[in-house]
Image (cartoon, rainbow, N blue to C red; front, side, top):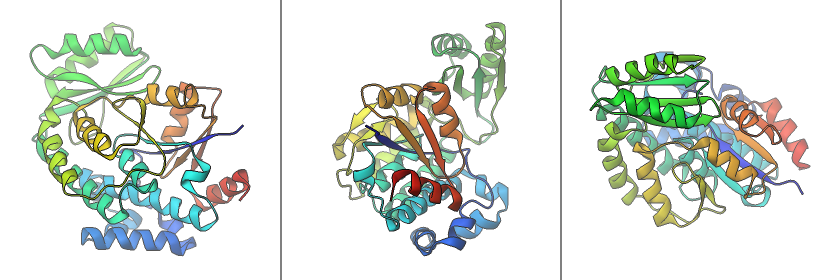
Length: 316
């Protein structure tokens, strides 16, 4: 029997023009973008549609923007007959994508999710002065070797695995000097490529503790319902449904590892999922899914044409 998980992309998938074709085609999408603009008190949709790119790329804008496109797609699909809890067994999201997943599963309102992600983006940016932190992709090393590289590179500073994205694609995060050492050590260990990433802060490491504290406070003030279907959480790589536990894991996630490889393997293994549908901008998670489990059917639902094809696939 076919079983779906809906997945939601994280930072890095944003691009100028995101959501513009959806807004032109669907009133449901326009309503989501308007709701997010009103919740934030800014014309985020104008930045999404027209740029400039450097303003869209700011963490405090990119995070709610990516959520807005994901939820616009969810609302359009719902208008075509999709029920999130009826057509999927689980939701999962990459880093900020967990918030999109929870909004899609009814745990948060779209307005509250937009405000939470604005706060999260600002707090992550403020946690470390610009130029003090860095992230690097280590390509071609397995997780165990990448972890050894991060440990060896730290030398009393912070350097840790931040994202286990797919076999042979691990991201490390920490202080600039430590991450630069990790790049050189990774090359010596046989990495195909090791390169610094164009990010504005060192996400998912201990340097983000001030942002985790800010999110603990922000999440405590927001009403949260139990999601309609379980969330496979980044830091657990296992399903959770209890709101109090999800709240705690969302705080832990700010400094914790995004265990994406394990999450997808759980979904397609114990979770019994055969199809992974990425709802949102781009196709990053779809590409990762095919590397993590070549047997899984991975589909990116990003454009009006994708929506039509997915509706047909679901038989709606």
